[in-house]
Length: 345
Image (cartoon, rainbow, N blue to C red):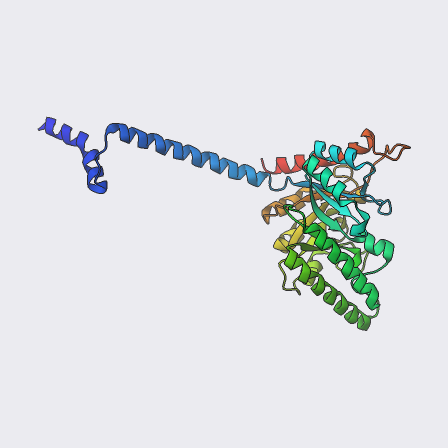
């Protein structure tokens, strides 16, 4: 009796599998299945760890704002494109925001070659120089000036659409224009701005390029000075390609609660500028970045953190950046990177 039960116990797994599948198996098959199960469990654990690591790295896409034009003194000026971009890559910068007046101002073939050589991507074209140099805006009452501004930005959309970057943005800050003290006139100006943006968005959506409206503090402009007003403004357009660019320097001036402002904006945020107070490199001032980074992580932001500053010295008499010039770029990058890594431990 005991011998029969022992035989049944040994044969039971095989009989059950035979009934279920119609195939006989051996213990060798069972051991293989057990090993496969262990392998699947191992793969699951590794995949889970990788997904957690990926989430930790979500905010580790750090970019840099640059320009070739000396007019904007708050942006890092490139003198020698080959030397400077090589250094950017060595430091760890993965993306570039370039401030230009016109697409005709850049030798794009050379620019592209340097990007590819250093594994850096063009992420954003900033338009502030259009306003600064030509004094035209998207709400100009003079039709030819407004049309000229729209045309200039559309050329930038066409240009950046040629790039296979992880994100492709056109940044609109000062070029959007300013409101008047006359409320009646403001209604007309806002109408012109909306009309301009509709025209720009038509091409942007076709080319799959995002338009970013920058939130700028009240000391520099009188329109869209905090994130909440930016959210309200872009909500008036039915477009997934219209987002906000928030800037920690401006936030430090006009936001009462930076953490809450970011949380409430959520998916409206398309890109982030990182600057310490006084537009210094991160860690060179008194800005507390932790609540902002925490909020960005919580809303699932995975875009670039683009450092904007030109707090440099050491430019040689031959007009080129030196190792001294690069020091704040290195310390600023490392400061933000360390904050993010510590936040995710």
